[in-house]
Length: 68
Image 1: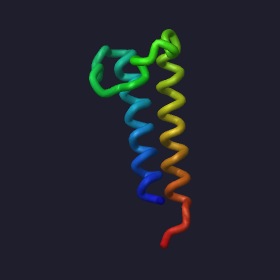
Image 2 (image 1 turned 180 degrees about the vertical axis):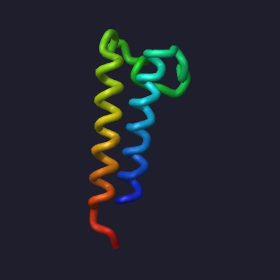
Image 3 (image 1 turned 60 degrees about the vertical axis):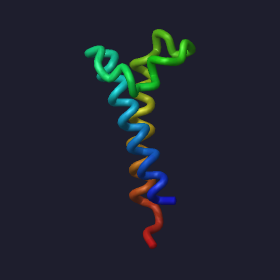
Image 4 (image 1 turned 90 degrees about the horizontal axis):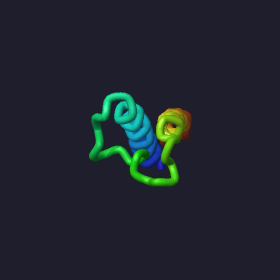
């Protein structure tokens, strides 16, 4: 379960940072998902920040989890 949380946290963090870089520079068009749904139109930066913060939170939770 810990490895799954680590992978999920990294994916969320990368998507958030990639979304921010896409908004600011126009790069990373192929693999960021924040700019794709029409429901997020106009809120891409907020959604990217939320994804990045959620990724950090999941990584912290995975680190504090029970080690076997």
